[in-house]
Image (cartoon, rainbow, N blue to C red; front, side):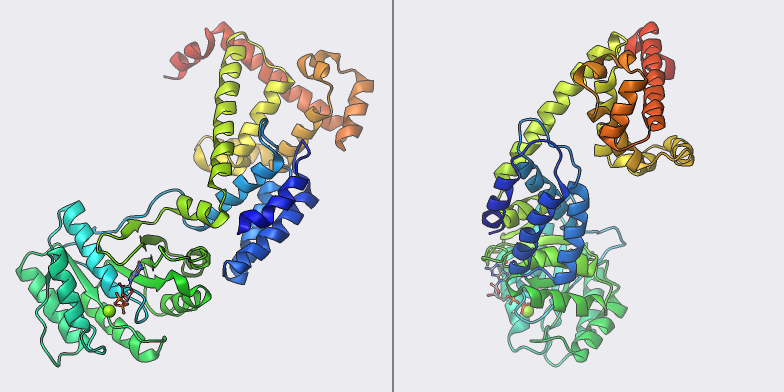
Length: 442
Ligand code: GDP
Ligand code: MG
């Protein structure tokens, strides 16, 4: 697994301090091989490696975890992001009933099974009145298969009429759904053994008349790279709204899941995890990421360490602010906090008021690189200088500038910024600490 490969590299990362570029590159070479072995599409791997490298280089290492552990966490976070982020997507049923969900995909991918599973879920978890219809006129017994599954999950299916075309069945299903005041109509379409134009045209015709709110591509996660090709062809032909990955109970290496999002741009909404009718679950990017990485425990150690330190730091900071204290260590902590929140750009996006501040900072040449540079300047100060910046005379400033690879004027800028912030802290203290500040703005 990825974890075996990374073990050796991470052992070499045990030094302290920020992650060095070469260390990260070595680790990424291993990550790359492991992802390719897990059947992730090559362009996806490239994009992934680039984004992780950028995030990891220069990333400060948390106290109490090793740089190696920290890289695992960074890789994990990037995997989660690639799989669709933290949130679990749900079905969009915001349309006038009957809301149509169309299931598409190759034969044998698990469409019919997933249709019945979803029907059960909608009925039992959301109290929906559901109707299913099979439009699969190609495979003998396909419509009958859905009828049997419908009986199993106690969801009605459209009565079978021999000799009808898919479009006619869809029309009949819509009429029937309206008459019975059905909330959700699930259309199980035909699949071929490979992607062909006939299949695509039929699907488009059905979509045109039934106007599905959700068009879910069902893909078999065990087919790895093939699943990606299939997804690409479907995404080019119909407006997919999401993906269902089946056979996630098998020993899929996760590659299909990773590529799927990048290739279709659509979220994976559900994972099929067995043949039984309740073997379906919302897709959890976090779980899949740690499965791919095989290092779920490392990730949670780093998360816990980060949370504990954050808590500690926040408490310490609040205490110091209440006393009107603000030294270089505090400034550094603030800078790092900003960086962790995604740098100035992300901050600006979050807070309306920050837009102006950001523009002003950019004008004065202050961008995310400046955050790193300021961090480096503080890093070149002695512990004593950090707590007592007044010590910084011309000679010391030159030493610090040389040590951090900047000009003396950059050191001065930082000192000025610190002075202003310190003054602000004293002001806050005078007004009665943060509580007073709250009263002022509340
Ligand atoms: P369709 O041709 O796309 O409609 O595929 P089916 O729904 O008929 O499924 C084909 C086979 O795959 C059946 O035997 C299903 O029981 C099985 N299957 C479907 N989804 C899953 C899954 O998530 N896990 C496992 N283990 N088997 C599945
Ligand atoms: Mg089927």
